[in-house]
Image 1 (tube, rainbow, N blue to C red):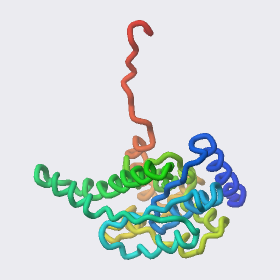
Image 2 (image 1 turned 90 degrees about the vertical axis):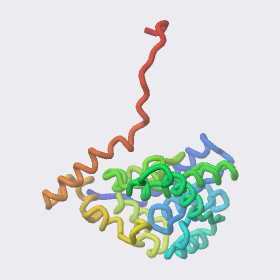
Image 3 (image 1 turned 60 degrees about the vertical axis):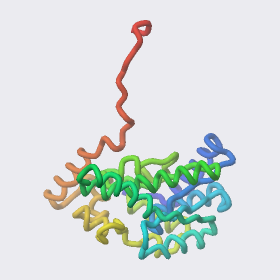
Image 4 (image 1 turned 135 degrees about the vertical axis):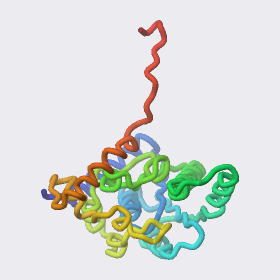
Length: 248
């Protein structure tokens, strides 16, 4: 299956431009910057659509972050304004309060930091007349590799229907240095790569998503199970369909 990175890149830039014209003509795009491919590509697309002066990068380390230089370098490469907000004290404070009352689950420890980071992004956004960019891609969303009400949300999402392979192609098309496109994604907690945590490569997942082809039936079953289990993350919150008597 062919992917026209040049056309998709141009279309996405135009889509961002039109979205802001309708939803915030004078607003900035506020992007949480990890230094990885997704946030790098989103920031670059926003620069192309709005101009670098209307893009702000937000760096949110949790204490010491070994690869923070990538984030700083990405902002400098694009020439965008950046702000650093260390979330460690906020995460520690909330965790400490909960620990006094409950046994904290591993899922809670994993998901609290991205939820606090999203709160930070919205706090920054509201302070600079901004709109928050979602930086998730289709491959991650397909298997639920995102945090509900954390990195899974935002005001607009350029990459949600694009696979990892396609995101990388757009990164090259828009002229990003290779180190941002090919940076190995690490979860930031246990030091494992995303692919180590998932148990399969993004190349395998992308091929399955786009072509329906997968060689290992065990991995196929794992992907299918993860996809079905996490579909709720991609849906709007269920609402009780109440109708007043006058409308029945």
